[in-house]
Amino acid sequence: MNVAAGHEDRRGSDRFPIEREVRYRVLSKRNAEEAGTGRTLNMSSSGVLFTTEHEMLLGKRIEVSISWPAQLSDSCGLKLVATGRVVRTQKGTAALEIQQHEFRTQRTAKPN
Image (cartoon, rainbow, N blue to C red; front, top):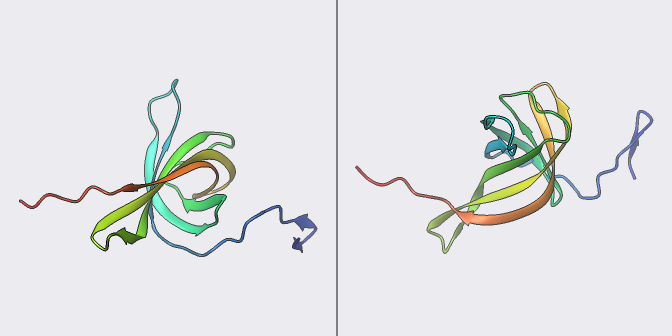
């Protein structure tokens, strides 16, 4: 385990500096849907750190949709859709602990 400035690094997975477009939305039945866009800063198999337009509250359940660099059959864009809880925030960023994820195909824009 890495220890820096007296703090244990509790991450169980290596993080990779991947910068991709992300769309997020808070999953809440009580409030109007809070949603926004940002960019991933780093990712692992268990979490993602991304920029946000809104202040995120710890423990909030959210869904993120991340454009994926690979394509299905070299022709169909993919996105990673993950849900989980916000485990860390700083001004303009949030860390999501991934609890569920799946790859979906991206819609393509129809020609005019």
